[in-house]
Each structure stands twice: as C-alpha cells, then as structure tokens.
Image 1 (tube, rainbow, N blue to C red):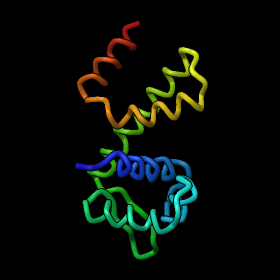
Image 2 (image 1 turned 90 degrees about the horizontal axis):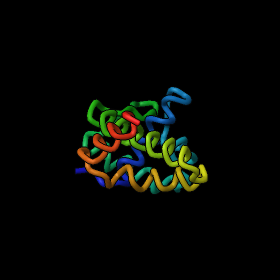
Image 3 (image 1 turned 30 degrees about the vertical axis):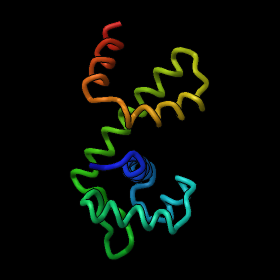
Image 4 (image 1 turned 120 degrees about the vertical axis):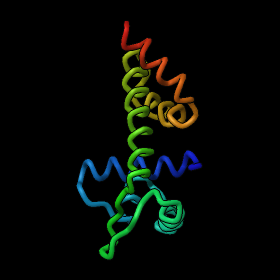
Length: 120
C-alpha cells in the first residue's frame, strides 16, 4: 500500500519525465518545492517499495508498478482539474482540489463519474 504522498512523488517523476526525459532527485525537489533531504528520504522509501529505481548516474526510473500508480494518479488529476475548470472553478483551486481528490476517490466511483460525464 502506498500513501498519497508517495503517489504524488511518483506522479511528479512521471510529469517531469514527460517534460524533460531524464529526472534526478534535484529536479524532483525543485518541481515539488521540497528539500533535497525530504526527496532523498521519499526516493529511498519508494525504491525500497519497488516503485522506482535509480541508476548509477542518479537518474530516477519508474518501475512497471510505479508507472502504473503514477499514470493512474496523473489521469485522475488531469480529469478532475479539467472538469472543475469547465464548471467555472478557478484553475489554481481546481488544481489543488484535484490533487486532494485524486488519492481518496475509489476506483469504482471514479469510473462511474467518468462514465456519467462522458455520456453528457
């Protein structure tokens, strides 16, 4: 079981990989606004959990399970942000709310919500 904060780190690695290709811990620290020590600890926990690896050059790589978690969270994040903005929520608020909801909603409720919105 991975915590919401771990999901956020994995999502950030995925986003940074999409933007710049290779990702180091320092890139993650800058992107997330956390200290290098916090990032180092989180990376260690995620590495021990089998969610990511670090190569000899210090680049972070998502494992298959890490990528699966990251893509699930990122998809939810984009979905909620887009739909909150479409109903008139300020983009910054939409982004923050999406970040909270993406972790807590059940797979079943998320799928039903996606289906109901897509049908409209």
